[in-house]
Length: 206
Length: 308
Image 1 (tube, rainbow over the protein chains, first blue to last red):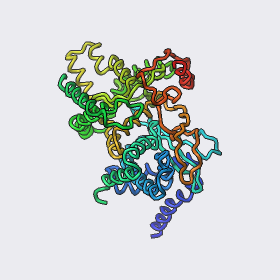
Image 2 (cartoon, rainbow over the protein chains, first blue to last red):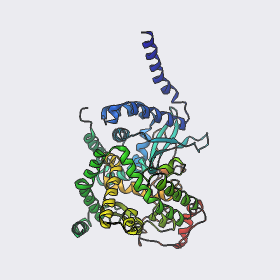
Image 3 (cartoon, one colour):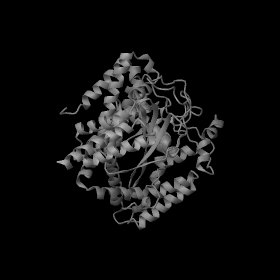
């Protein structure tokens, strides 16, 4: 019984500590800690490996989401159109974009298969409030694929506002897609298109 | 062989005729969007009917160890061509690394099935003749979707045409005068196509989910990816454009030093390729094989500028 209590307390502590420290961690340590934590969870969870959407979405929402600034991400992806949107529209855009990215990201996680991820030393001066954390995914027989995280310092700690895989930036790629949607159907049209996309991706059982 | 090509040609023609009025706001990099979209649809149909099912079957039937071995084998056959391209781009050290990769993997790695070189601190590189042309100052030219092979540009397609002469799964049976030469050629090329597609299954499934319009998503990703590869993973920051992203909630003003979020990613700096000036698909400048790669890249804009 005592042993069980000890285990329980230990587990709780392990869960609470990273959350408490996350705000103080430097950006490179933050990305590394979160990545390693997420990978160790995937490695132990057969359901996520088999592609269970609810479980991987829950993992992303608990562990990854708190370290992203979706409002900044959406604003950057909207470019000049961001200012043309009303506050209500802006809020809807952020919500829909966040849902889309969480669903996509959770699918990507279930494709993880023991690849080795290396983190590179931070090149920016310590005083910078806007940094790029570089990492590399290694796999036999293919060149390493870079994953770069753009982070900015906020009052709530460092937050990611863009991710680039192999030099392809998430924000930039969506920017052209958003711009053409707004050109053709307006901001309301873009919100509808995103909502429609998310409805199609709705996990079956959820 | 002639039938799919004729079918493809008919589709292209139909699309060009039908598509002229459909694109109201063309991307300056993609003046042939109607034709490209038709080829994209055609490729998609072929993929759904043949390539993707074959790749899924391949992944279902073979255990991961075997698939890794096959991937390594074909990857190894690319390394001599990669080494040659490094040399053509003036990167002697990398050329030697890639040549060493080929030697170690072909011998110790049992004909390339094992990638022992990576563990010897000789990482795989990504080079092709399209990138070499880019380092020499050749502009990408318009975006071009190639039947079966997919997204490309005029320059990169020219690179692929040259590279077919160095494609070892096809050329080795010829050079070594195998018995049943054509059977070997088609079997190896077919296996390479299927295993390549199998490696991309996760990526394409993800794309299916992420993209609002898969065509523009693939196109934009292609231009960013090529730019990254041409500069070996360290592209210079793009010059700020007047189409500044808006302020975001609790966000400081845009920092010009962050390349990933600058507006309108172009493969070349705007100084060399302003939108609207796409009169000629190629802009050839003096071939310039630099002493060192960093020198070539930092001066790339300067090298191209005098040509106009």
